[in-house]
Image 1 (cartoon, helix red, strand yellow):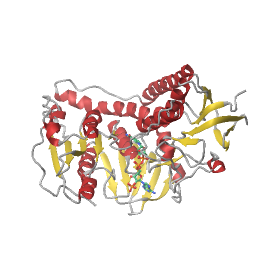
Image 2 (cartoon, helix red, strand yellow; image 1 turned 30 degrees about the vertical axis):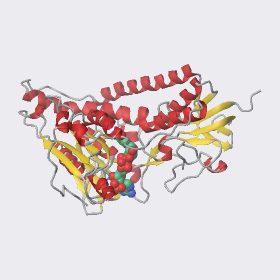
Image 3 (cartoon, rainbow, N blue to C red; image 1 turned 90 degrees about the vertical axis):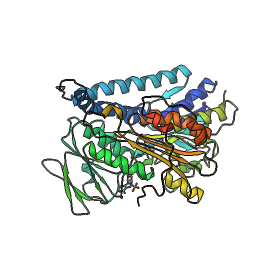
Image 4 (tube, rainbow, N blue to C red; image 1 turned 135 degrees about the horizontal axis):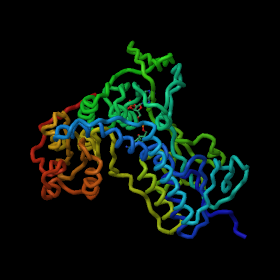
Length: 461
Ligand code: NDP
């Protein structure tokens, strides 16, 4: 009889856990994977995927206006919120089903229960009380939206989790936060015709992005109808007969039908029994791991958002794959967290890879070459729609290597996926420019920027 019930027990069937479980099972390991919710995790069930469908849905209002500029008669368009939500959820269920099928095909046992670690090689299943043993345990439980303590009335606010289940389309939405989720949902609601206000505590939205990108996207988002209120926080929320009023600490009172807090996510480590085996957590509650995703505890690994390295789906997938490769295919593999491209699906969207100008200046001691272009997309040349693109390259002044590429434009995420190959490969600006432009496209601007921006470019606190 085998020493353990399984070779690998994975807790959490999201992007990272499923990839690791499948690859390990396909390598011949006996694998179980436990999930307390629906298979697919945040990305498939209540994140990237349904969010992107909402982005698509909300973009049509603008497309209709563009169509009129091209000679189409005004479209008689109304939006069927419940109908769209139902269709979207059917697709999400289909995708979740594909994950289940793929796990089954690989031979992994899927356990629909919450699991917690009960000993070095033991996992306890909460509902059945069953105990299962495994040679190795992988924690891939992701993160959860976080709500700040100490705001009276905060229970009247929702998070992105609930945003997918709003039954009636709201007329007014107030969003708290200035990160990915806040900006993406603000654009979604505004595109659908909802009166949208975004309240952020800092000087400008999307801290961490290049300052020119932040300034540019802030203007573009406002042009799309999002009201941005900066430099203030929520003192308390008050439920009324007409909605929820947020009392801000700058004295403003804003009323909305829905108040959504998007002020970050936290690793979902509570109640997992991690302390029983000596898994180390950092101050944010994230599991501390080494380059091979190994925790401080023998026989326990962790991948994805629960480790709070780079909280993106493809990163979790790569970390899960590297773990399976190392532990079940005898091929030690680390995922390289350098130069991971990222996108904000704002409207227009942002694509970004590598260093911001501000980060690059810190590394080079102040000197960087900056190339930047702002222009109106050809598509809107005569439609009367005021939208501008931004393209920016950050180049090392001595090596000529491209350190960062940043785009705000329609399809920017699609462009940056390919730009990231060149940036990751370490190309120089001269090599980049030797690639012939493809005309007429937006992306051709990226290989035709010849003049350096005279420093300093726009800087913001
Ligand atoms: P982010 O970390 O992107 O943004 C959090 C926002 O909340 C920031 O603006 C932050 O302000 C603000 N904030 C934090 N604490 C408080 C507070 N106490 N009071 C008021 N505001 C506060 O988190 P999100 O929740 O938007 O997204 C979580 C992560 O999920 C992202 O970082 C990203 O990794 C991932 N994600 C990726 C997406 C994509 O790839 N397109 C889409 C959605 C999520 P400040 O900047 O001042 O700290």
